[in-house]
Image 1 (spheres, rainbow, N blue to C red):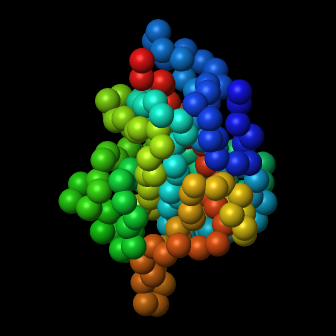
Image 2 (cartoon, one colour):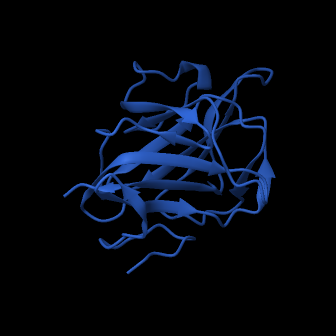
Image 3 (cartoon, one colour):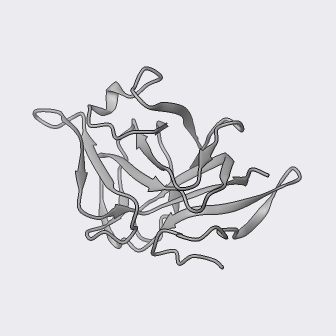
Length: 177
């Protein structure tokens, strides 16, 4: 069974074959593409509850830019096990709940291969760079996740805070056998 792209997958069977990475099959773990409102010049974060009860590694993640722009990535993406409500510049290995980080590579972030997430667990993804334009929904369309926006250039600078809606994103990985 494949989950809708507009809702958090809630079943164990989330395998949406995309392509092989070595001998492993890359699958979509979670995605949201329902947002049609673009915002920009902000830092973005999104929490995601992993589907099912298995584990995934070889993670890759991207945001979606303004309508028709496709996948985007900038700066470094941080994967945490807990919510972060500090300034974007405060993200790093010493951030509580830090799991891993991935620099932008083209239009996506590719985490170290051994970075593993566990089904049924909520994780937070935060970008340390301001994105010029990215898509969000103004209502929650991705159950099990939340949108976070921050801005280091505000007066005063604005730490990440939870906002209504969800970011448009794609999270992929390999099912750990």
